[in-house]
Length: 185
Image (cartoon, rainbow, N blue to C red; front, top):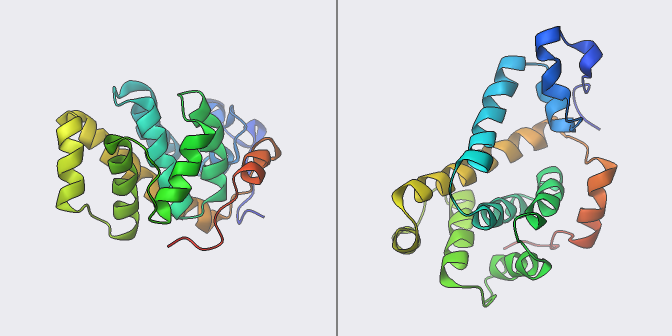
């Protein structure tokens, strides 16, 4: 159960009602601080809709990050969102395999994106080899956008966990289909 109450449109002033229009628990809890909610959503919206970074790679990085941190809320949402941009069940299984230090058979760039998410999550920086692989395949702007995505989701999962957001029933089926590994190494 969430540590703060979820707000609805009736709880907010006119100009702030738009924050909760999605009905997502994330927005309903961030609405306690409307300006912060808008700033957080603005960066997330930019990275999702305005960046030219390949959307599948973006979602793979997000899924790896939230899988590593066992963020049920973010994982359930992004499992569903990622299908719209070409992430397959095999890709999700590849994330599990790569996390367990296995060879998923994914292309080099995909593996480097997943490795970058794991390194930034566990080590809070990238190994030179990982950075060099990203630079060999992506533009400088895309590298920055990818690193911003990983950093944003490392921040977001800490907020989600601290606030103990509940997974909405519509997203629980995603967790049932793709549970976290018992131990993530």
